[in-house]
Length: 250
Image (cartoon, rainbow, N blue to C red; front, side, top):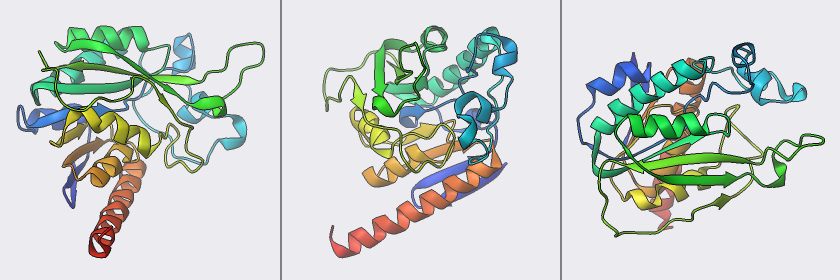
């Protein structure tokens, strides 16, 4: 395990299931994370393919590092998801929010796992990736991914309201095979308030960059070293830019 502290963020190079039991119970306002979907096909052999083959067209392969943990079959994906979601719920304050990404294949399994882990399932927030999503001839465009969200028990009807659908394109410059917009993460953080945010599957640190922009404490965990290094660099750059902006009074 390696731990880096960058500003108000703490980043772990480790398996999330090893780190979660070491964190303080009830200390997070919310969970926002993008776990490996173990998706990309209908059969076990499809899921076992390299992540670059599953999630990128052939002309873009090799641009980004592969990432780990994306080869589980449906039953093991449900068991694993229930396990980490249960441990994450123990770390979340009463009424705190969980938001976890899914694609269409894993959406039913993810909604089941959220409930099996003891969260109150509240709904699904689509991310419309616009017409820049990958086209499929003779089929409907694969244009959306989904955020399954729930709460740790009851949650009062108070605080800011966020959109029920986010429409924004995939970033032209990504840092990860499955990279998502920072603005999307900032929008999803809105209803969680200003408390600390936990991200068990940090990837390239997009949620962390959003937390820096909002002035929120952040704990991120990533098991692929190449992406951990990218996340550290992005967090350092975001923290430095925040300091520059504060000096300028922006």
